[in-house]
Image (tube, rainbow, N blue to C red; front, top):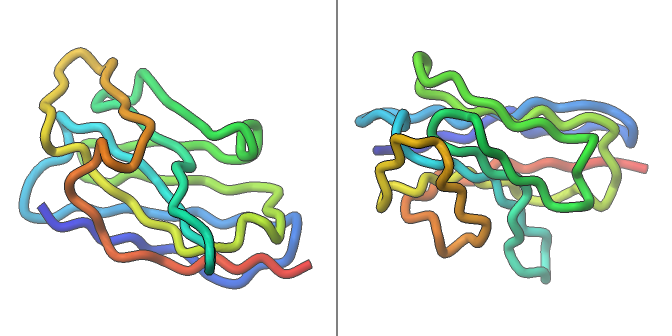
Length: 129
């Protein structure tokens, strides 16, 4: 499976962006998907994750109430709606799939980056103050 992240850009503080992670080559239907970000000089961190069915999600504390993860398995795409953006949200955002585990229950959501085996290229998000 190949993952393509898109939707990044430059936005003012308080603005919104919607990131998309589109898969090709195989279905994402049975796999958890995560969004991660990495700012210059910082480690990659988990932003949000969603289980195969969408019934289980995870958000890091700093984005709770502002970001919403969702998925459309019919379109083989996962979204990250980002509202009320802050300058500290600026980073390269990556999506990744936990292709090592086929989850039919919708409960498997690894929170750490090492739980994800297939990574897409990043999309830059820059939030100006």
